[in-house]
Length: 394
Image (cartoon, rainbow, N blue to C red; front, side, top):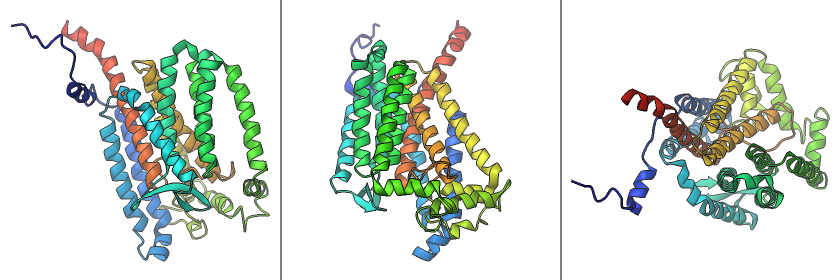
């Protein structure tokens, strides 16, 4: 009997079901690294926040309970997204971008929740969403789609370079209006890195990087509070009781930790380091686990990024390559900048340590990004194993 359905086009329902077909297993090493980092983050958030939670909320496990909830939801998100064909995001690119721009605009126009002198959060009941975190993921998805579509046109200025720089600049402007200088820097570096990988002319990138550096320096110099932070960072000893208090205490944490650290839960600098469980959790790791602990953490990030780049090189299409490389770069940039700030190698930026720092927005967005990356790895493993299976069944 001839199957008359074989040549008919797939229905919408069949196409939808096809998006959730799992082509192969995820990269187990990459998945294990993400799970390990999330679990380690829960432990370190508890260690860094127990005293503050006791004083502020009369519950030493207040932040622990919330971080465990964020971690559990993050793992479920990562698992679910890892089962969605990454090519489905091509059609969702602009809807995702429009939603993110809308949320960021809401923050800019005063509809967001204010904290620490900035309006960076949208309150949805008990959940606070930070649109700038979503913007990083949305930009990677859009750049991957656009770069793959333009192909060789990436080498031209008007088609391959300028439109990407304008989109990135628009998102950066929305970040600066919140203000969120750190996220703006990450968006710019993400754009340049992905353009370089896609084959854009180095001259264009270097010229734009020079102009961006000059613009960034001007933004810092002519905004009083930013310039004061830079001065305090350069003269930390003189400002250790005011503007440089937090980075100075973070540096003291690394110094007191030595080679092997004081032991988990035995750090003393958390008594002096404000909000130690958020942006400066790296300093707590340095004090409690020492140089060895920080080195192991860095190795985990290096392994995660290396595995992501490996996935990018083996992706079955250009879109998968750019997507995997962009997400790997996102993890690398945020980890590098956060730890550099914690060690006082850079002025304070307000960026979280991926999968480790306390907070729902950062953890959930990073988990979503890891899920997309893991889905690309499913297709990579399928492509690698297909010839072997064909040979075995021949």
